[in-house]
Length: 236
Image 1 (cartoon, rainbow, N blue to C red):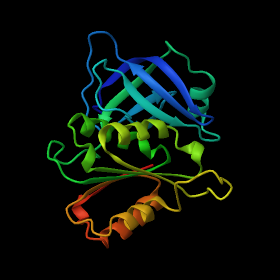
Image 2: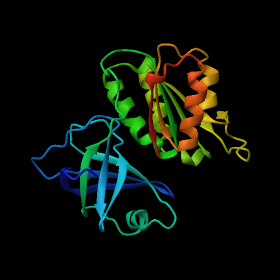
Image 3: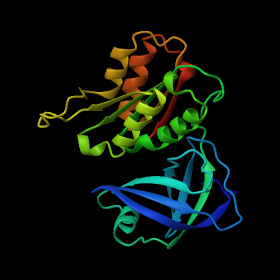
Image 4: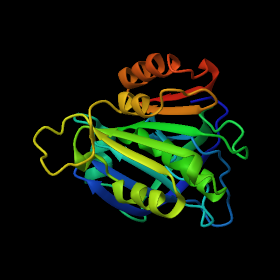
């Protein structure tokens, strides 16, 4: 965290357990204060002398709430605290916003392909919300990769974007062998995107997820006409 970072106290406005190991937090700023950020940026939560970084999972909202998606990690004291002790109306200290994973020319309509792995969906969600407000839905392609169906923790919300705004949404499961009812795509998320888009000339790609996914996506998509300068990443 930069030494000159601005810190703020925020209140837990809501907690929503989306899956057994993913919690959605809504943070409220003190009355009369504002928090300016760009979709794709992140904040640090300062707790017990350490800073934990989390992407903001919503475009700036009229009510000023900030949204985070936190996955529980075994042996991690902070995520244990979130899942076991944190309650509505509790306070946290945050710093930020930080990061350069932001939209290029957000007001310019152009085809954009989003790749999300697991909770890498959080900053992608903020991008898409901002672009849907600009009525760019038909130019957006979202590929969300997860191990199993339950890991697509806001699947219905993504489906609603597709129905209401014309966004092209493709969920992809990598460990779905035992799920006979799954009629969607199977395999690796970047391979699904590459198969659907053999020519990525003129696209902007935003990828957010674990390092192996990011590097595999970079290698594959650059072979398909994507300019290196148009591949934007956030590693989880």
